[in-house]
Length: 273
Image 1 (cartoon, one colour):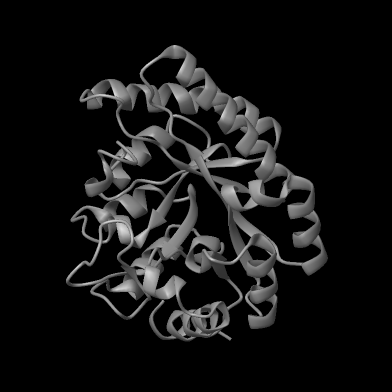
Image 2 (image 1 turned 135 degrees about the vertical axis):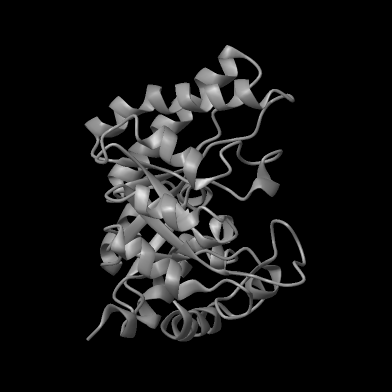
């Protein structure tokens, strides 16, 4: 059977069913026969790393990634050092839970100086690469849509993420391709090809029109304007054969019963992704 016709690579990114606890999300995924889950750190924190690991191991589910590390820029050296320590904790969590990849959302500027903030990002990644390598965790730089530059990340294009990642081995640092953040980019397919061998994650959702909210306005696949299948084929041509995460921030979806969300997610994944 073609990989386009089954859900062997489908992963529930936990934020898609945010009202569920880690235990609820794992149990829901098992019921829906979704084989992968991407875990958010605040869900680990609610119950602790030891209990999180037990839930995952008992269920036999695979962890596609941990979200998130990063957030490197800060106004003072003390704050930047504290963020490096937090990234090391995130790496430990990924290693303990069997996740190959820690997703890096790199962080906004603490002031108006974007150049300095981007330098802080590069320095921050450089500081945590050896620690991640020791623990067998790869760092996936996720570029965000430019509209997030002021609040979440000064890394706003796949080209820039590639620039940062190419300083390292593909076994150390790569990129995350999230369609919500990159679908608009006229250079997208060239940059996907450039990232061959270092794509560490692929995230899907849809861009709704009109966009109801900059953060909470992602749609279920098929409800928006992103031509999803060509992007997936390009990512696969560039060597990515790993899990495909459905990552949706949307209050209407969060208000649905989680089992219904998973059923719809599976249906739309097969139809559009």
